[in-house]
Amino acid sequence: MSEKKNLQKKNILWIIMAVAIVVYFAYALLTDDFEHIEDANGPDNYALVTITDENIINQDLGSLNVKRSSGILHDGITFSSGKFSGVYEVFTTNFLFNSDFTMDLTNFYINGGNFKMALVNEGKIVATVEPDMFASVELHDLNGSFSMVIAGESADFEFTLDGWFCEQYGIQIGK
Image (cartoon, helix red, strand yellow):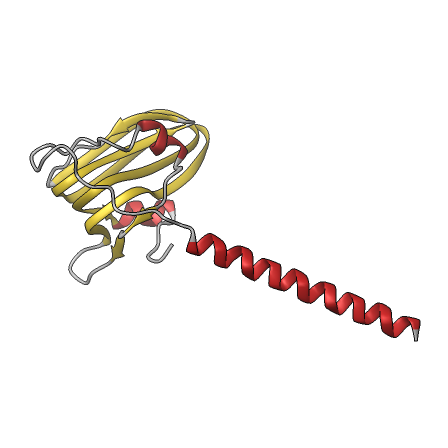
């Protein structure tokens, strides 16, 4: 009889833990109040106003409305949004030895809002990428954690990462 009561107590504890986990995640989803950050400096100025370099480095904001796609006509992955707000890590890698880094972007446009593309190495922004039809970045002697982070305040943007680059760094759609 005592064994049966112990088993019942364990079952009740498991049920309580399961309910607590569900309640925790439901609360986290319902209280996530991240909203679009409005463009505060006008249509001709793409500089960030609200989001700081520290937000980009620490990636301490959420993000809304980043779309990833690949197409038949190009080899690569296109990132775009009509109204992107927040901070989004496009990719991250880790260089174990001093390494060189080359990245080619095509069709990099900002059509509205505020936007910044930053390359972060070991907690420092080492480069920003300016919009251009064909943008290229070359960095040398990188070591440690390295990521490409975008930040936007109601940003309307688009860029495509080269297919070879995506393959080399393991960037896939839906990740």
